[in-house]
Length: 308
Image 1: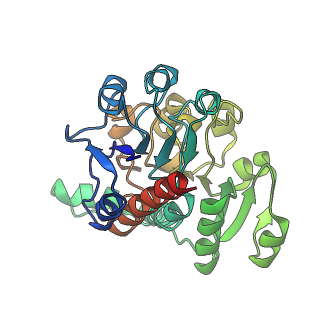
Image 2: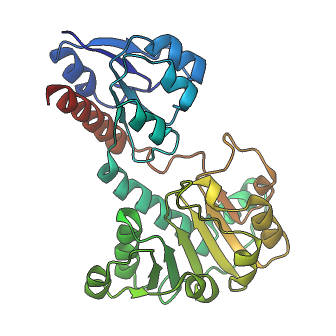
Image 3: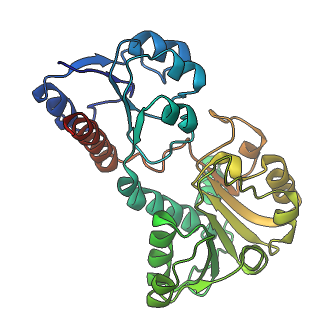
């Protein structure tokens, strides 16, 4: 029987024609998101009411949505995070959840390193000074020899560590289940979470956020960070207390911060005030190459599921 698939992604097929070609060749009945924005719950239900599968982005699939998609058998996420999906309800209803974790590793790692260089060499600060008509120079810092602490040594945290080691940084990492063999091979020191927070010149967060693993860098943790240190978050917005970070930046406790994710998006909050904060609108995985590959793999995962 012909399967019906909702493509919830608003930019689907923008960077490669192959994902659509694969669905068409598989004789899928395709429902596209033509609304030009991220689908809300009501729109998902309306468009996906009789769909067997969904090619999903970061839109929300909560209990209400899943209860109102009676034919749904598979959600294939273009990307890695599944925190926008009620996993327990999906499991209860027998809905498979698939994702594309390997594709995001390189783009997120490169984005993290780019933010570090921006903040060390004061690129955003000097750009803003020039745009305001000021030819002023402030000394930056080298990455070489800096102590960088990685919180979360999963796929992305490992890649960031490897890249930073190639740039002669002194890298330490914390993970709940550390890979000691990998760490030894790559000369990365395994440390405690407290050690990372207290001793690092640069702290990079690469953890997933879930109810089962609710990590947050709050006021107490930020207060223990080294004076003049840098904080980078390209993982999930919920893992940092925005108010505590704002106060640490305002007081001069921290040298700067790089944020690609926020607890509430789109973000227009007080952190926008600072020249020493690099803010990007959740674009760590947004490269033409990675988006094309994510969509291809998401489609392939879905088709493989229905063939099995």
